Length: 588
Image (cartoon, helix red, strand yellow):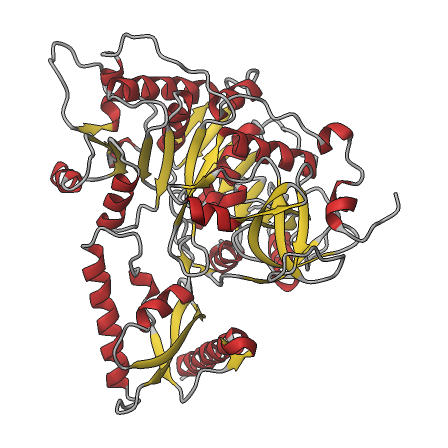
């Protein structure tokens, strides 16, 4: 085929793939029924391995049926939204499948978010039920105040390693508004009506979150079709086939699209076993690696933690693929990672990808293609990619830099109750609707995308939280003494990254350590005050800068924008200088 020079016409990322792969049929069914159909012969195979609990596919479906029946008894209807605030536990997967089975929608909230955020989303979604973890009845009573919540279901700490419910209660008239997860089977026994369990591709399934350029979340509505199409596109792109007994380690929290939609649901759609890490840190990383994962869905931060904390004699020979999402793994980091795993007996390959909540966390991927380490792989087979001028939206040719836009059946439905925001996130080009991904870069003549920038800057901490320095900047700019400011992520030994602020003070304020401490104290007070407000735009405690440097001016580049590359270099040099001093001090 003669090349036209335009990626959207040539579709070089699809070369070598069959007609069926390039034009896949997306089944008109729910995610629950799709996973069940994909695993008809795998009933006794392990589906979930979480801490000390293993659940087979057969058991997972049984638990989900019970929960879905309990939901019906509690009044959950088609299109109702259920917020879930808990770590990556097996029960969270069953809750999603249960809701999906009856046409309800799940939204996973970060278990570390404030009470105000949880209430904000409960009200925004007009939710009747909230599901959380390890909370008291007194706490739950306070959470119901000021919301439309009717019941709160709590997974007790003592039940996280149990796949069973409490014995069915007999001779009782009703049940409390504050329900233990283990009581759901008893509640399900009350419901004796017929109910619908067959839902199609257009049914809403998930509300995920994306942070844009500032860290303020947007609620992204994802349908059954979006998830199933993403799974089929990825399987076809990477030539991925289900292999008996293969295991995938899921390190990223379910509140992030990469954690649940990509890592977990795709693992189940492929008939593999999902090893869930409710939290991952230097103390427990070996516990999860000893479960012998074949795939590791991680990030540069996860890799760095493994390199620092893995026991010398641990055998990692089972691992053959490390997939980096959420942040780009540089060629140098990948090579160091390969050497690290080689020392532990593994012949592993590292893959980059790119995506966001609006594309079910995957726009491009490298699995199954020739490795080009400076790229984030190719657009998914079945989708169309264009690179456009950010101002004129005219399509760029190969190797010309611009804004990556993706079209396909995996692209999100809408931002919840935000029609104008939805419209701005999409681009209609030659009659086809594209998502503006926010990724800046270029497509080459082999179909690979090289990312040269983003519309947002963030770093992933060791606990999976995303640090958005630009979000901190919004709060710094409210402080009376601040004339101009910028924030970056500075390297950190414990959490991998910490927040660092550069500030130009207004005239009359002195550049002293005392002044820096005053600013930090103001920010800490903002955290407390905003947590008591019913808002989703609050300052997180981990965003507060560990250090502040006062400067005469913030270095700028074209268009009056902060020179973040230079600022990040300053922060890195500061960290390296501190690290050298610690080493010198330790030798004395």
